[in-house]
Length: 247
Image (tube, rainbow, N blue to C red; front, side, top):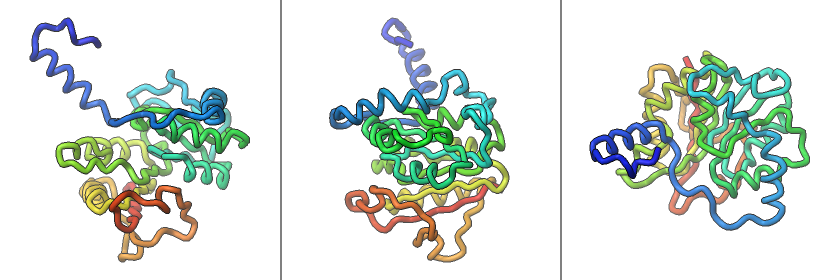
């Protein structure tokens, strides 16, 4: 809505607050200009796997199998997949699992699409937008797991409210995950790891699966390493692996 013609400042402020409450994606959407191959992948591949807007309604009414041409044994969501190395490896390794994925950054999405352009695309669906749009549309108890790998840390204290892990979003994750469903999170930013662990641990529907330090310091044997994980963030420390389970 265009607010320029509202004369009442209080009305404008209330409206902005309502918009902010539903917004869970911040920051820029594109970096350097795309090359021809990346742009071609964006133009040609994204329409084949794009989630239909008609089924992305914020009322938790859509079952994941409605996004695919055939049913799958499991359904997982990856939030903010970067350049997509993790989800592309998963979709190749597990053809019987349906993957939903979101990445708002144009350069990351184009890299992912270029990588999978020659693959079978029957078990991957994605949007180039906020992953919470998918989460709010999914039916209760319909997901087997959620990946949230290295989310934006939003270092400044005044920006902590922008972090994707908060009690409101955890409520949504708990709603759409099956009993025993997995919430898997990683970060190499110490205070973000602590933030995510504390918020998830304090949520009544999630149980931290760590029994000792190795459980959060060492990844599982079948872990898929991404380029971010190898490179690391500037000034970041060791990667932390947080595995939670829905009660």
